[in-house]
Figure 1 (cartoon, rainbow, N blue to C red):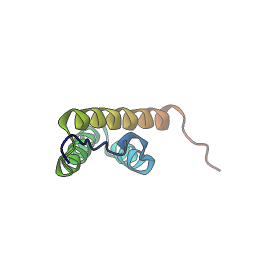
Figure 2: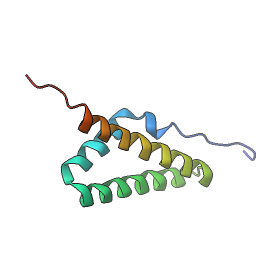
Figure 3: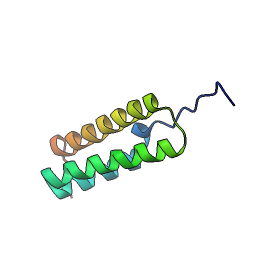
Figure 4: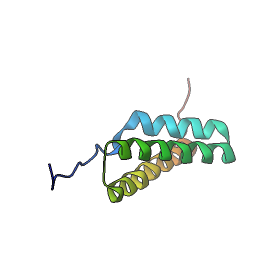
Length: 84
């Protein structure tokens, strides 16, 4: 299969994953939350490497996932849901 390129399903569109990382990071606080984000991104990159995804695509997808997580966190902070 030379010449073929695997295009991963965009991690940034995996809403459950993005929400889960963002929610847990907010629960942990600043320092531990940042560590959680870093570990989660590293884990996703590792999974893509195991699937033989090209490094430049891994970098792109990791950045997109981080952006989606941080956007979700800002939404949670700035637009809290009304309870009741």
